[in-house]
Image 1 (cartoon, rainbow, N blue to C red):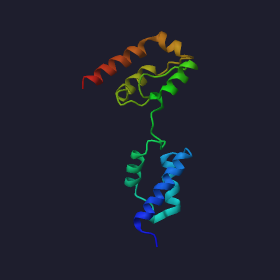
Image 2 (cartoon, helix red, strand yellow):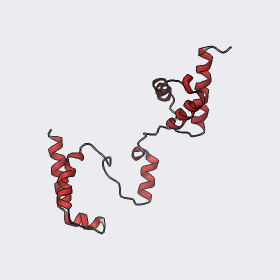
Image 3 (tube, rainbow, N blue to C red):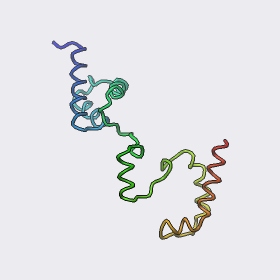
Image 4 (cartoon, rainbow, N blue to C red):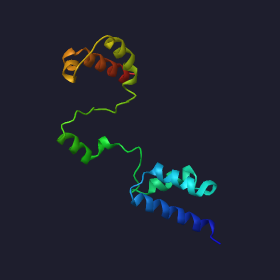
Length: 132
């Protein structure tokens, strides 16, 4: 009969195998819950094991910080934001921008830039947030 430690080692091996195949952490844990049900390792234990394993692909990685991703974006000449799309610093500026933009229509980025008011309103909102 397998000991508790033997079962943990086997489960760890499953995680390492699936990670080597390129499965994400969330996918691996969901599959383990399906197979092991009540005897599946806890969320906390799983997260600790994932943190120790640098080869495990995380679902919450920040691709905008990857050098390869940045190079590909530059090569494709794609416009990128200097901040996260849902940055907490931008949230307070949304109601003012929404009120200002009501009824406006822009066909492309150049028209928004030419308008200029959005940029100045955003900068003033960011300055106000930074001073909080």
